[in-house]
Every structure is written in structure tokens, then in C-alpha cells.
Image (cartoon, rainbow, N blue to C red; front, side):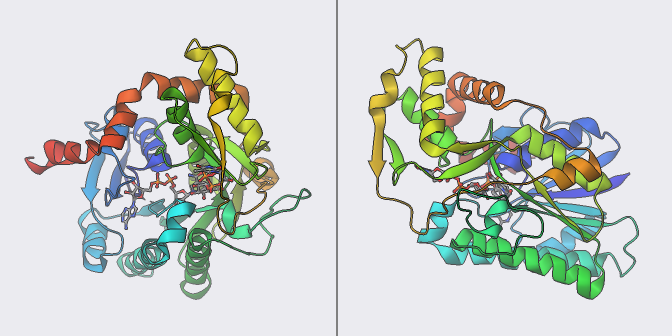
Length: 350
Ligand code: NAD
Ligand code: DAU
């Protein structure tokens, strides 16, 4: 039996990782620790919530005592750390909460791991899930490799960079067994509708304006979320201790081109005339410090651990648009704030 603490498991990527591990590894106990901030939603996990190898714990990673207790109570062997404040625009408005959760929260987990694992780190692993944004911004040329120097620009990416440095410092200083991955932009089901793709699908559905930052010329490298979860599985089991792995699908899109694909797909699925929703495109003031281009070179992960994305973008985007159109209740619940009630109904009287 392995007792694996997954933090942030009620969020977008975390819920896909929890589902994969619960279903694929019946011999592991999966403890999903999440503070259920605005971004955490237990409705993302209704299909596995009664599994015998799954436990949910509501807790804040910044709470030193509680985190320490959880390590001893559940006899945690390994951590997959995803809990974070994750939205760049929010970090511009409220950088402090990003420093608290992403930096202090991560440090707190590292301390708990170090003290509870008693200096004998056999069969332990602290897996830190990070982002390509720590590498900064590219021009039209080149890719981020694992050797690209850190150059974060937003309070979000600065906080993630800082957490990465702490994780490496625990490896160098205390030999805590760690591994880090830095992934590109994810898309797929259960993404909070503040991020580009779910926000725009929801707005197309409701004939609301589509707010394109600047000229829509920024470039992002998109990966289907289930492929990120599969990469985490591979790195968790086969990654070299102390190492970093970039995760991405060599799938770059200019925002405006991606938005046109979303419009085309959604209009077709909604039975609208082709391009009918293009009139919703509205150019708005650019994001402050907006990184121009991200592009990940994930060849190390492919060459050393054999991971490759499983899905072509066209198929992934079709599945994603369909999912949001078929799950309007899920989006509505978030927009109404109703899913907050779900937690009390499900757990408070147990
Ligand atoms: P998300 O915002 O959807 O989910 C974050 C989860 O963390 C939520 O469930 C939230 O309740 C929880 N959380 C936040 N603060 C907490 C705290 N103090 N204590 C405990 N739980 C807390 O984020 P996401 O998009 O799923 O990202 C997950 C991780 O992956 C993050 O570390 C992010 O930096 C990283 N990442 C995201 C992407 C992406 O495209 N979304 C790409 C690369 C890396
Ligand atoms: O690269 C990985 C990162 O990808 C993750 O670490 C972050 O957690 C995740 O949020 C994401 O960051 P981005 O800032 O790239 O994602 P977002 O969906 O917010 O924006 C994607 C692009 O679309 C970006 O260039 C800004 C633009 N955009 C976004 C929104 C929300 C718009 O033009 N309009 C919008 O309304």
C-alpha cells in the first residue's frame, strides 16, 4: 500500500490526476487535500468519491499544524503537489495570496515531508507540479528546455518560480527526494471558466462578448489535460530524483486563431451558421506584463521516459467544446456559486 497525498485534487488538473490514480492504482490510498477555494469543486470528482481507496480532506496547505497532522494520521509516503492559486489575472490584482499559497504553502508541505519522513527517504517522493511560465516569454523563435534560465514576469509565475527553487533547495540541502515538472497550457473538462477556453465557450453559448486581450497575437502551447495527468503518472513512477521534466505537445496557437477554432466548433455544435459568433470578438486592453509566447520542448520526457501526447488538438478541442455544451449545469453551478453548498451537503453530516 502506498499512501499518496495529492494536493489541489478538487481543481481542474488535480481532479484528472486524482481520477487517474484512484482508478488505475487500487492498491494506493489516494488522499485528496484541498482547501476548496473558489477554484476547488468536489463535483469534479463525483464519479470516484465513493471509491474505497479515496479520501477527501478539506485543509489549507498554509496551515502548518494541520498539514503536519495529516502526514502522520495518513502515514503519507508520497506527495503530488498541485494546490496553487493559478490564474495570472488574479495574481495581478492580489499578489500576496499567490505568495502565501504558492510559496509558503509549498514550503510548509516540504517541511512536513522532511520531518515526517524521518530522514529515511526510501520509498518517498515529493512531486511538485509547476508551469512553463517560470521560464518567461519567448520571441517567435526557440523553445523552453529544462535548461532555460528562470525569468518570471507575473506575480503568479514569480510565485511558482519561487516554489520550484524551494523544492530544489530541499533536494540539494536535505536530500529530500523530489521531482518537478513544468507544463504548458492545459485544456479540457472541469476547467474553471475564468481561463480562456472555458470562458469563451460559455460566452459563445450565451452570446456574450469574447474579450480578446491586446491584438490576440500572443501564442500559447496547448495540451489536453488527460495527457498532462498521464505525464504526471509516468514521471511519478519513473522520473529521476532531483530532475525536472518539461511537458507539452508541440501545439502552438496564436490566441486569435484558437478563438476562431472555438467559434467554428461551438457554432457547428450549436447548430448556428458558420462563423455566426465571430461578431462577439471584442478587443480589450491587454493584460499587464502579458508574456508573448510560450513553447515547450518536451523531448527529454519522450526520450527518457517514453511519454507522448495521445490526442491530436482537433480531437481534443472537439471533445472539450462538446463537454462544456453538454455540462452547462456544471458551469451554471460555478457561475451561481451553488457548488459551495455541495460540500456542506456531502461532507458536514458524515
Ligand atoms: P486550479 O485553480 O483549477 O486548482 C487549484 C486547486 O488548488 C483548487 O482545487 C483549490 O481549491 C486548491 N487550493 C488553492 N489554494 C489552496 C490552499 N491554500 N490549500 C489547499 N488547496 C488549495 O488550478 P489548475 O489549473 O488545476 O492547476 C493545478 C496546478 O498545475 C497548479 O500548481 C498550476 O500552477 C499548475 N499548472 C497549471 C497549468 C494550467 O494550464 N492550468 C499548466 C501548468 C501547470
Ligand atoms: O502556461 C501554463 C499556464 O497557463 C498555467 O501555469 C496557468 O495556471 C494557466 O492559467 C495558464 O496561463 P495563461 O495566462 O496562459 O492562461 P489564460 O487562459 O488565462 O490565458 C490564455 C491566453 O489568452 C493568454 O495569452 C491571455 C489570453 N486571454 C485570456 C483571458 C482569460 C484573453 O485574451 N482573454 C481572456 O479573457
